[in-house]
Image (cartoon, rainbow, N blue to C red; front, side):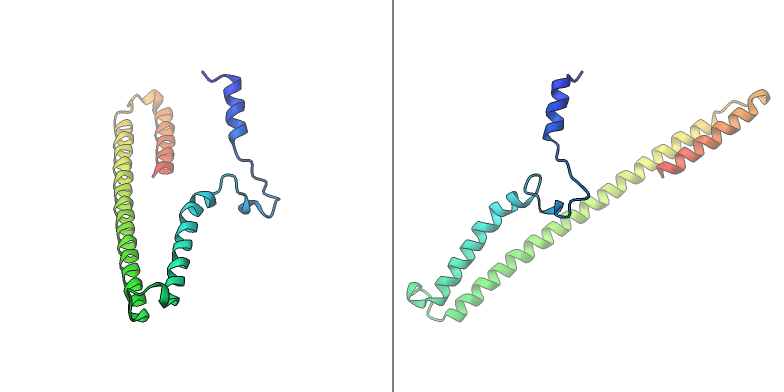
Length: 146
């Protein structure tokens, strides 16, 4: 059983959105922005530093031809990015089909249960109207699930 204090604590932790406020989507609390900035800011600073080094050839004597080093960097970046995108897309595709399969399996179980309920309904002539109403109600509820 949940106490009143626990309910109040949960309610205070909830984020209340006002549909009349036009800038609701710019709120910091409850946003994914802090988590994404943890990755975006260091990566952008690293990219800016790399760009600075590529433009000042005196700081990078290892590369005689800056255009060749830039090409190598972009090639490596593109390869890694494409690999990650393909991997994530493949994983999402597999999860999608797994979900579809599970939903189809659940629908088959529901249909089996409803067909059993309809098949084993009573055949008493006195309750024929009630049985018919029950079967109709059951079929309507099943149509909501599918």
